Length: 323
Ligand SMILES: [Fe+2]
Image (cartoon, rainbow, N blue to C red; front, side, top):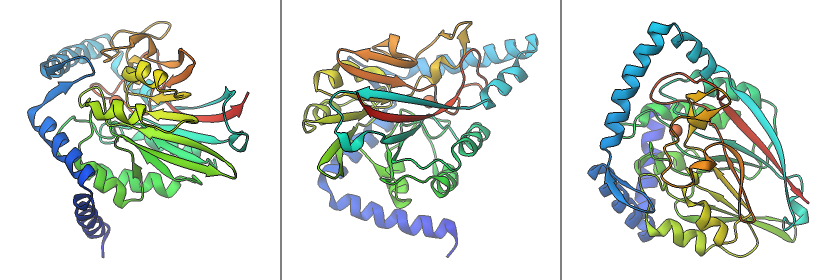
């Protein structure tokens, strides 16, 4: 059986399984409706996606401006210059068994726009053994249309990863409901407003992942955060737009992406556009909200234009420490 046929069969089986899960099927039908309506559901409003059309028109003009200035090629070189960012984060409430737990975060891969940054990231993480890999959304270039062409890149990614507790993924605003089954067929655990518990000896941590909240917010995302068990909790949410909700729900760590660190920034890394409707100050890097630590990665790939200025793409390797 060739790879495509295998994927097709696996996806069909998974679709049937998903349809036996009433909660997942209810989510899927709601999500498909929101995708078809091309609306933007944020925690504070429901609007059209007219801004996305306007933004892309603006980018087209900006791209020609870069070409005229001779900066376009330099921007592409910047976009291909990926780093592996390592950091240790300390938490007083981390169970002792999880001291040294390593999480690899890969975000905003947009693999069908520029594939090279993911290849560069794979080279950077080669040989790294991690405890958990989390994929925090935005896997393709477009916000609608087919996605099957990106799956080989994820097969390649999985073949190169060594993660003891596997790979969790959440959806971003570029991702569609039908991707879930295709990812699950590859062995990726897609968290849709769900929590997983990881046990080590007597200790445990909880990881809650929500659906995207930039285009597809529903109260189920908030309910998943509010309903997560007590203890050390990590939130995986594509954008930082639910930072306040997660902090109030007692999460210790919030991992997001979405902004690409601004992608095209002013000198000093100041983003011109964040695509955040809330918590814009959390557009990049480490931040605190109440007693919760957050990290917004600049991500691996790019969208709109294949360029970066004054911000660098990254894979992120976080080591949890009991502090
Ligand atoms: Fe993105």
